[in-house]
Image (cartoon, rainbow, N blue to C red):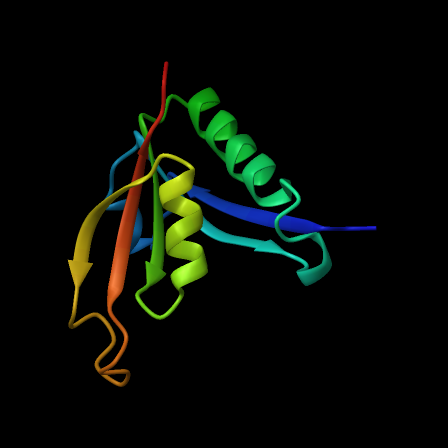
Length: 108
């Protein structure tokens, strides 16, 4: 039974979050099924995303979330991510949502 999954972008044309930087990978999506949450699945997926990015010589893993997703913010902070960008104007149609960009430095 599948408990979760992750999607990572690296060296991908058209992905603006990559900023054209080859040393950056973006954790595009990380999902864990409700019954598998708080069991270590998310942390394992995040660790594997970091390993995958390091194999491609990335120095940082970048993650986007929003202020309204407090559990995700807590999760990324617990994984050692640093909040790097707060963009109040990223979602014009959603005035109450603020874009948060987290960065995890990857050990060599």
